Length: 531
Image 1 (cartoon, rainbow, N blue to C red):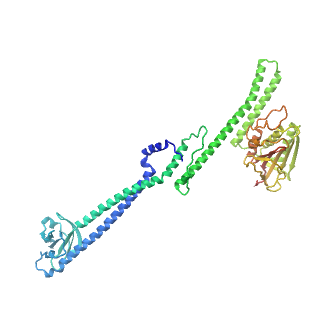
Image 2 (spheres, rainbow, N blue to C red; image 1 turned 90 degrees about the vertical axis):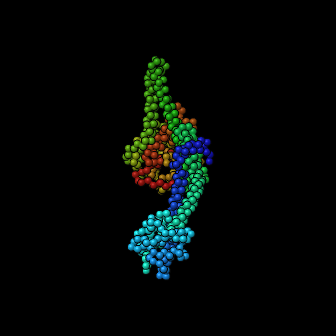
């Protein structure tokens, strides 16, 4: 995927200002904090378990020492202050012992490092007061000696107190804490570095997707021609991953943007063409009116004033008709509702054919009503009449004198069949609003069809795709009676728009020597489409 030169620098600048809020940093911090919490819990658990184990072992040794002091008491000479059991083997250096009576210590000694005994001083003795001779274990801090675990038990004679230093236990716990802290720190640092590397690598596809979005965002979509927009690469559109899903959705969004731009371009082109055609159609009668007015005000005798007025009136009527057609199309585009009433279709079509025959006597007009029963439609009578009249006027204007124009009103006998199929040959079909190009669809029950056929020269194939667009003309393709003015190109567009507003559909089939416009309208019965 192509990267823009300035994207990385812009991303770096934005990342420098918001780095602590980035997803990468937050993930690394989350992983690190989680690992630190886990390591802390594990270390504390290990220390506590080890401390309990070591303290239990020390308590057992203290209890054993106190019991040994009582075991040989009857075999030793000496009074109540005798601490001779300290001379026995198994008492390590630092062991202290005391005898007390009536809550007062009467003798207290300590085994020194050289195996000798030392009498405890007053402050050291004071730290051992208040211990009951019930065999319970206590922790006491002896000044100058450190922390001790002591117990006192009563025997046949004077109770004895024995204590062992906790220095070894504390030393082991301290070393354990140091070792675990060192290992945890190294492990956390390693895990943080690995997490940063892995997260960075895993987020690269997201960075590429963001780069694609940034490149698309910089394209000026509001003006000028837009080239093909960049897409997310195939490697970043795997729907099995979260980033791939984002890439797929982004590509769909870009496709939608491109299609919207293309549609906007087509709409703008149609609008420009529409405005140009409308301006041209309005300019012609306005120029004629201005010219005749100049003749009249200038006193030019070449044109009689009565003739000039008649021409001004004719051009004014032409311009009025054009403006009315444009207003009608605008109302239909806005979706304004039409008047609705029940209309006899046969009567309406017959009136339109009679009027067309009166206006185009040089053509041969035929009306065929293929109806088993009277057919009524819910429609605006004047607008539905305008649909049929526009189709008849189109046939009269664009075919030579003597052309046979046949108008057929029918309802299909069975769904999916037609009493008047399209002629064999190379006919070209075009559907109107809501129809697919090149598909011949016949209505089922609940529909009626108005067909306007002529055996004129036909419609050129290149004109069929735009036959129902506004200001579409066939001046150079279909003959017209000499001396007759051309239309505005709005007749078929109005017919298509009015048919759609009535809930119907319109299509055209044409080949040399045959042209048929079909208007399909729903009757009062619910329509059922059969393709």
